[in-house]
Length: 260
Ligand SMILES: Nc1ncnc2c1ncn2[C@@H]1O[C@H](COP(=O)(O)OP(=O)(O)O)[C@@H](O)[C@H]1O
Ligand SMILES: [Mg+2]
Image (tube, rainbow, N blue to C red; front, side, top):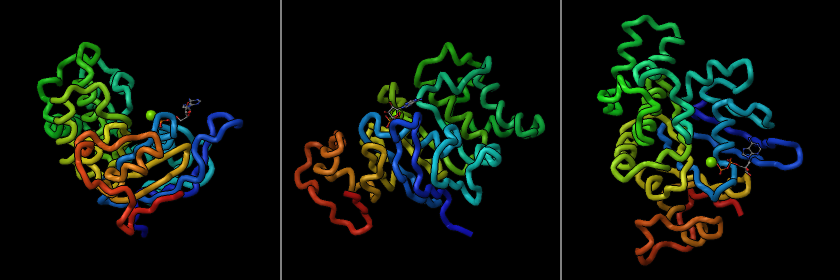
């Protein structure tokens, strides 16, 4: 049995044949990983998340989640293992109330009403949004929708959580709440984000992408203090480090693998 939970091996992908969006992406993730997936606009972060969760199937290479190789046939099982929080939470909430949205997946799994109730309670507790349970999603703020969307994912009890730009449109208080929630979840996480300060606080590992390739994969602080590497790839140091002197210009830790 493999100790890697996500295996992504030589994955290449194009939306249309004329232009390759992802080129030979390979990485593995284990049980302790919280990975910040970073890179400039358009490098393919969202596309990679969509492939991992089986929303884009026309890729070459191989993806496995746990012991399951992602194919059209295995998709229902893969989806039970991976929770994907969309960039736009509007797309994730479609029932009349938050409660119903959270209950949707557990009901679909065929759980009885007590078990569904327990899943919903647990998810509401984890995110601390009991007060939202009877609200209509379309009347909620962007921050409330994001928290509710995360609760719908947790009710599926996934092993892996993927989030696409989760702090976009959150005010500082809700952003802080999200950071605390992320740090309290012991799922394997992959978080695509431009919010490098959030990544610094929530992720042990960073994968830096550029033009559809992995440029660097290593320990968060090593990559996020490497001004030269970040700037060469269209990013900047996290705000909280911009005033710091002595941030490294060269990778110094051997586990950081920089692909030049
Ligand atoms: N549905 C789509 N059809 C065609 N091209 C797309 C589609 N979605 C994204 N792209 C293109 O794929 C590239 C990578 O996009 P994306 O994965 O969204 O990047 P990121 O999330 O890193 O900003 C971009 O050039 C984008 O224009
Ligand atoms: Mg994106």
